Length: 85
Length: 388
Image (cartoon, rainbow over the protein chains, first blue to last red):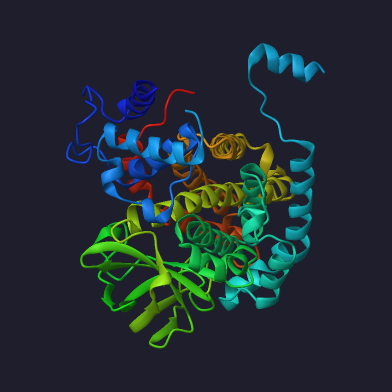
């Protein structure tokens, strides 16, 4: 299930990280591709794709730094809400 | 039935629902009766009257896109677009109130903390309290990250000091979404106009959207309770203001379609009635070329807005990128249409007896606000929308 989630995140990000095979533990901010538009698009994508809402106090760059971290956020959010993704 | 079969076969249906068509008629009637006949006078007086804002409020047009549980109108994205187009067709200054109020109310609902929203959401959503966006400064326009307004944490409070400029409806707004530096992190705060240390100075002689009650703001040690922090420190521009600006661009794109449509309406009437060389202007082929460009560009801009609205409505992650495209194209279409409209009206187009000069001045504004054309060019190239 986690692999499937990571694949969906990677597919979304791949459009913005052209010619770069993004690894699960790679820091997307350090790569220099993320601007404010993509940062918010990413939030919207995660919410829409996995069916939860990111609250104001969950705005933490660590949650979005790597695909692994995003997957962990999804796991926390969906298991708390009892949502299967 | 035939339409349903066609949709099944083609996978595409580009048509307003009956409810959306009826809503558009209501918006159009409101604008024709209460807005368009007076917009030129408001422009000259540099002031939208407060009773018109009351009418917007009583019709549920302020806060229309916010959810009903936040005191808003719960309007779908397409219907909201139609509202914005119709208001923008009559008066861009009044449209700009919808834009700034809704974008701030929406961002506060999205990123405000529970304590802030508990006390305020319904007042913002219903338009009972008016909001404005306090981003630009004398030396920070397109380069928003260079704002100098400063926030300092003192115990459980924040103290804001700085100046903002070109704040639409800054003369009368009750709350301002302010971007400030907190320990050098870009951070958003919602500042009530009643906060001690806050003052505002009207700006006059603005070329376009002259009735939008623009102001310069000063925050001189404005002390705020911690609940007025919106989002977390460091996320003010990337998430809070970006959320607001995304809705703002959507609203401005539709408003630009409204300007282009108003230009087209004015030109179709004028070129049918005005005669030169023994025939109506519209019978001249070079006039027809300008009218055709206006018709086609207006329709293309509206279709891009429909596309952006559809994606927003279904919660597609492409919606932001598509909104950029719509704003980019529609704002340029408005400038082009308004430029041609003044031209087609000849000497009359340079007077206040016809609305087209106002349309031209207002169209330049939509090409600058919520990201200038050049900023859109950079952003769209870096964040291209996916395949249609």
